[in-house]
Amino acid sequence: MIRVSHIATVLLSGVLLATLLGCTVAESTAATVEASAEAIGPAECAACGMVVREQPAPRGQVVHRDGTRKHFCAVGDLVIYLEEPSPHGSVTHIFFEYFEPQTPIAEMGTAPRPWLKADEGAYIIAPDRQGIMGTPVLVYRGVDGHATNEKRLTWPELRRRLLSGM
Picture: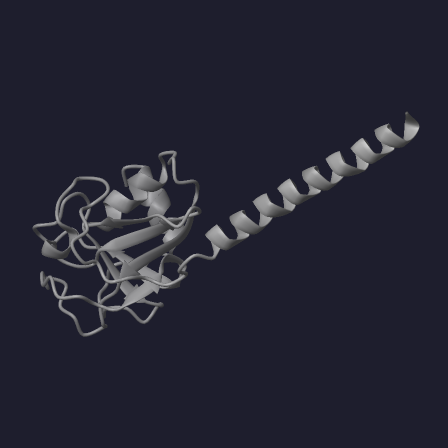
């Protein structure tokens, strides 16, 4: 009787260990899914439903823990989206298109632009920029952004400002 109990305990322990390891590996794999931005393609904005590629840059995208990718037509839409729980799990990666320093603030082109990770950007709230839903935000690579008197914000600073209603 003791032997059967011991064998059952060992088997149960093995099953539990395999289950835990399997979950850990799956979560680890999902967290590393595509740590780079993808072309927008025919994606619709996860916040407003508009076709993202038809909207002026900068546009954004996130990758969730389960590998699901969502696109956004405006920086502000993405910031609001991050505040809501998702059935896809937490957001593991955030990307934005960025402007070159010589790009005029009024630039409203829809051509694809290079992408950067959210924490690598310098953000400028550009109230003079028309035609953007919500608060118009420009994204530049690092602190050497556009030659303007507007304050450059880090990603955490921008999120706080947009969520506080500025």
